[in-house]
Image 1 (cartoon, one colour):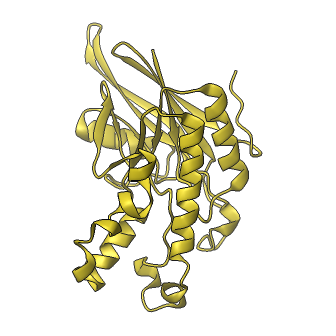
Image 2 (tube, one colour):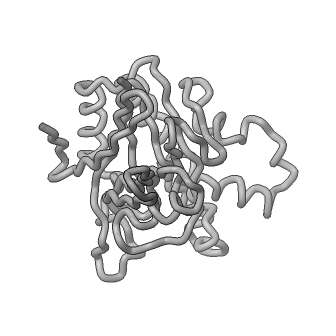
Length: 245
């Protein structure tokens, strides 16, 4: 039997410190066999297209966000030990490479500016996935921007699962939800799951939410493999704590 914890979008430096601390402590206590992260661990607002030509582009704070991300990921690594740790590419970490290729292409070949090196993942023994990959039998980790966004929790992941023919765990939506779809007949059926793991962001720092609220839920995910069977679970983070029976 294998147990996997799936981290949700942290959006560092806009993360909720209580939620992050709770997830680190949970990993220490639960002792999973693997740790996955669906991406958007770094928010990287500075090179965002939304900040182009604006004050945010010249804020000079990107290195601070990178350093803080390195520190928090090193804490997850310490909590996990030497077990496998995967992080999925995402639209926010893509911002750095996209910005460089558009406005500083001469630097695009520098290995020190590759995400694995820039965020210290190579030295931490973290595998950075540049595309979706089947990490468990019938299960793929995605970020969530690979398909169409759906407002119903779990639907973005399930629709992507239907498209690729594999169950999907993803983030991106900041929603916590699990959906499934079964096809077949006369008892010979196949079930696809769509698991969205929520977020660990401090919603008060999401200045782009004009109403100050959103249909978002803090949480993480758990996958338990028993042979070829994989069971998915949503785990809410409520009041900065994680509790499971």
